[in-house]
Amino acid sequence: MARVLPTAVSALLLLSLFHGPSRAEQLGVAFVEAPELSYGVCFAAGPEKGFACARKKCITNGGETESCQAVKWCHPAGWSVDLFVQHAEGLHWHEYLCGWPSKADAVAAAGLRCTGSGRGKLLQCEVVGVWTPDGTHQKMPDGS
Image 1 (cartoon, one colour):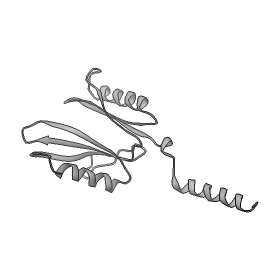
Image 2: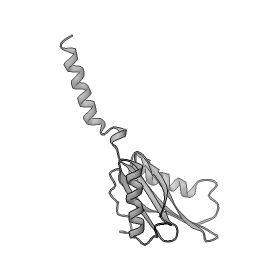
Image 3: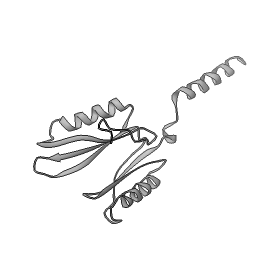
Image 4: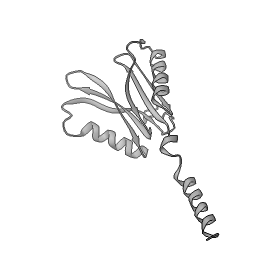
């Protein structure tokens, strides 16, 4: 019995090393938007800090305090994507996908979101931002 306990503890420690941070320890992502003006994206441990940070970025990027509104919170953030979507009638907006386990999954989900049924007639639907689970913005294929 004395031998089993250290072995079990060792196994649990090894499992925790390979499993990564718990869900509670992972960052979430906050998206804030001022339609037609600006946006902000921040990764944080909780929604209050995330939205406050994203709102500050939205204002810094040209949005007015009243127009920078919380759009989406996702926890854990996972791989996150910002889609620019424009309808054939000219209306345009952003959609945010988050919580994906890999970049490939996030980009595949974005592709499905752009081409899936019920989308209507879109002039444009493309990924304009990709972030890692720790909040690092990824370069787009066009270098932006």
